[in-house]
Image 1 (cartoon, rainbow, N blue to C red):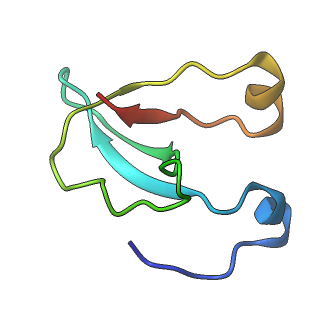
Image 2 (cartoon, one colour; image 1 turned 120 degrees about the horizontal axis):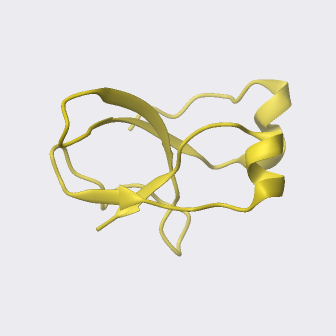
Length: 71
């Protein structure tokens, strides 16, 4: 995890994590990853299983990006 200042447009969304998810079908996506309950991302590990996380229509309209969470 790299910690850096967020772009101004994303300041209200901090903390947020991004990762690369390889789908079973082969394509890879850059996705958002939610923080743990304590606001950390340290429980994420390379190659760990994740699953698609549905978000509200409002969130998709505001930030059109796929979200994944730990499986």
